[in-house]
Every structure is written in structure tokens, then in C-alpha cells.
Image (cartoon, rainbow, N blue to C red; front, side):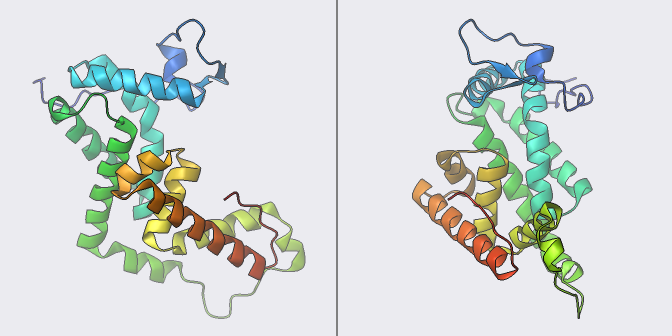
Length: 229
């Protein structure tokens, strides 16, 4: 294997197996681990440590970074492409680019923001090249005469969850991306700003508008939604 070839991590472990649990020990006095997963502050510290080692061409650190970030990147890519196969290709390409360009990276930067920005740009290229978004919106449109949910269904959390997923998919692109990165992937406003190449204040504006739109849709369909601002 040449130095520029992508290290091949072992297959992803079951969701209950954390890379923290498998290999890395937390320093004394650090935040606790809950159900095998480190609390956010510890996760951020580990990601930073692994990233510095990746920049120095440490393959074991790359594997740890891969295991810690892979699932979230897949979810984010799927949210853009609506295609798990294409999402997997995009995420693999993002890791390949990170490894091949590791010596060009700032080891003090946010690797999470770097990876999500790379995945976002690659996924949007796929959408533009194949006009995937237009086809998917047509396929997912409600069929004519689709009935509204009954009052009993409106009380069902599963129905609300399905509706929310549909409404999130219909948000303007920037609002949807900001919401997914914040609420589902746990990125800070600053990290989202680096991913989307906008100021943190603009990220906040996108989130406020997205949440307002979701509340309005939920209210119009008879749901009582408690969405945090």
C-alpha cells in the first residue's frame, strides 16, 4: 500500500460498540461514558486528537476517526441524495480526499466541519449532475386525493414523525441543511457555518426559519409540536 492509498478500516462494528470502548481509554478526570458513548466534550477532544495524528499520517488514528464519524456522514449524505448507495460512494470519496490531502490540513481545525463540508459539496455535485433532486421530489409528491390523517392518527407520534421527515425534506435547501446538521448531527453554529460557508448568525437565521416553518406545518395539520428554537 502506498502512502496515499486510503487505509481500509475493518467493517463497522455494531452500533453498540464504540471506538472509545474498543480502543481508546479516557484520561483521568474526563467526562463519563454513557452506554459506550462519550459525552460531547470528550468526543470533540478525541476527534481533535485523532485529526492531529491523521495529519501526521497515523493510520490507526484514521481508523478511529472513520469509526467515530462514518454513520453521521452517511445520514447527512442520504438526506441530500435520498440514495444510500450514492451516499456511501460520496462518503468514501470524502475520506479518500481527507487522507490524500492530510498534509495540507490545519491540525487545529475542526475535522467534523471539514468532513461534513466535503460530503455536502460532493453530494450537491451529484444532485446537479444527475438532476436527482427534481426526480425525487416528483416521486415523493403526495398522490392526488390523498386523505388527511384522522384525529386519532394525529395523536400518533409515529404519524407526526413521518410528517416531520416529509416537511423537513421540503424545506429550502439551506434551512434543511442547517437543521439536519444542528439537530441530528450535533454540530455547533460555528461548525455549521464552516460547512455551509456562511456566518454563524446566518446559520441561526436558517434554523429559526426552519423551526418556524415546521411549527406552522404541524399546527395546520392538527399536531401540537414542541420544537426547540
